[in-house]
Image 1 (cartoon, rainbow, N blue to C red):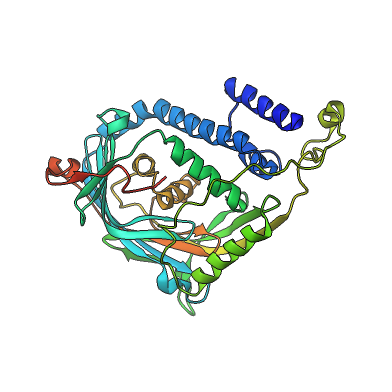
Image 2: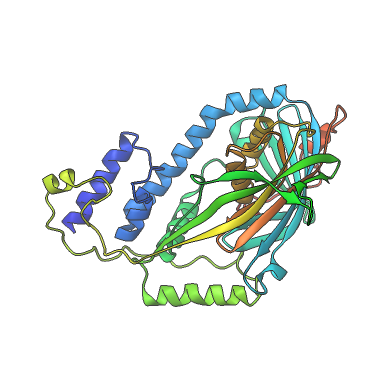
Length: 394
């Protein structure tokens, strides 16, 4: 018990002095991942709270420059088409597709979609509008409309205690995942067309002429740890995956929250001294927690990107728009991809991995600058009712 208290006190002391939570060691694991493995609920909760606080602070620091960039950008209408695909048999049949319609006026952006969110194989369909009013206060700037039910929800910047504890329950009940797209070896080569006389591939994507490139060396690296999970936890997770691969997507978005998870018994006592720990070579720290139950996999992706010099929007402008809709995690994946050093032009068609088994094809099929974007699009209709618990897109 004393060792648990010592660990918790060290964590709280570091957090009180502003230690960044979103860091990783040389093995790629974050402090939150190690806390989940150790299993002390109080420590996990403290890290989750601080992680969210630091994310809000970073967003607020970025907010003035983001709003200024939106004001400088011309008003427009744009359409993005999402097609989700998988190599898992039968899974592609149940994966969603979507056409997003995006309107921009001043520092306001509206996105109409039929896909509330797509995250960890859970999705929800509907007639949804996401509205960002950059000139309003942070607590009132993000709104989601359910146009079928005529409901709306203001997205909060801060989670309630219940939401935090629910998230801790999920973290303690799930695999510790670390997934990243390796960009170290990525190169781009011109895609070729023709059987005998080969030439660079150039086609129309919507109204835009585009040069096609093969993306070489794209690898999705996935690492999974489960030393903190019991056999009962593993059986539950296996049942969920079996149900999913058989095409059953129902019930994943609305599962009842699990019961509160208690702290795990601490791992065996370590005899490592502080001096031994400090003198260990980088990346070879002595084991202080549980013996790691670890699995690593990597999957290469054959992907293409179509770059157009004719698209009116620049990549920097697109990044500002994607930052606004970052609460939708599949859009955050798109933003991470666009941050890469791409060939010249604008990426009007992209293949990107969303999950280890799922890729998305995104097509920018329409764009036009407009001076007549209706300001009513960025307001909540008068006949809509407020429902603070309608959505969860974090």
